[in-house]
Length: 66
Image (tube, rainbow, N blue to C red; front, side, top):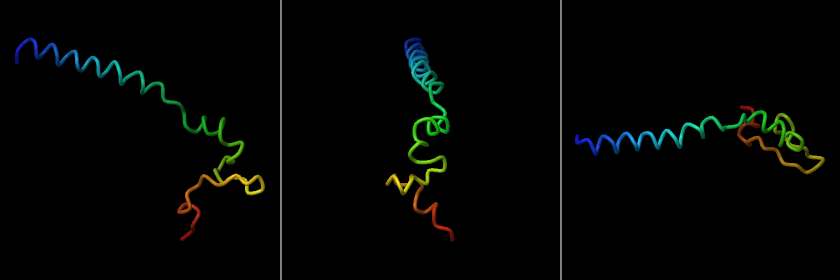
């Protein structure tokens, strides 16, 4: 490999790491987000509230007991 190719490879890897690493640490805790934003209407178990006509967010397959 020539020096130019090595430098370009190092720069490409550095750029990829610069873009990817911070975004991984910005991910939010899904359970805490659901509890704070969604559980008021959907319930803590995701069953919904039929009286308020809020549908369930639980998949139909998860509700069926085999």
